[in-house]
Amino acid sequence: MRTSDRVYRALRDEILDGTLAPGAPLAEIEQSARLGVSRTPLREALSRLQGDGLVAARGARGLEVAGLTLDDVRELFEIREALEAKAARLAALRRDRGVFEVLREEVREAGERLATEASRDDFYAQTARMDAAIDGAAANPYLLSALRGVRVHVARIRRLSSDDSARLRSATQEHLMILDAIIEGSETMAAYATELHLHRSLANILATMRQDPTLPPTAEERHQ
Image (cartoon, rainbow, N blue to C red; front, side):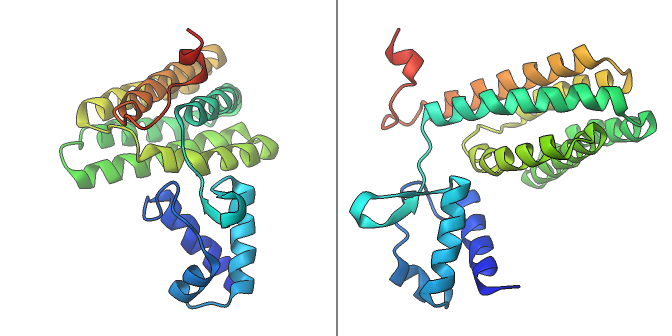
């Protein structure tokens, strides 16, 4: 693996898991020393992260971890809903019913194990497997490429949600609705269940973010 690739992955992981918080400065001298690399591969990595939308310019002060506003999250969910609803439609049309019947049982079991922190990790791992199954059944590489770009930011935003057991149990039921529709080959219901799930997820995330008094309201709220 090239040094720039290694640095890119290390910084990307730290941004996604919150080790590098929104607004954190990414000065070349400090980061190259911390990561034990020269400034050339660091610059290559930072350029890629900027292209991903995870790093932003600080004017004359260099680069920083990109911030997350309520509008950022809302806009991301707008494109996420369009892409994931289409993927669910295609999955319902092209699915292997047996694959999704097995997946449904796994999702149901994961939802029953939500009493501990470890089970939450299991829940999100199962969610990733469900996404992968739907993506695979949709069988559209262009759609998958777009979804990969969106999910980089989804992983970051997920840390902001209030993922208490009650919400995760509700999300499990929403996932089961999506899977039931795909198993039955109902394109319309698969898309509807996906949109419903994302609307509720967005509401949960925005409610959590609004507890931070430093965040400005959304553009829609300002114009009300």
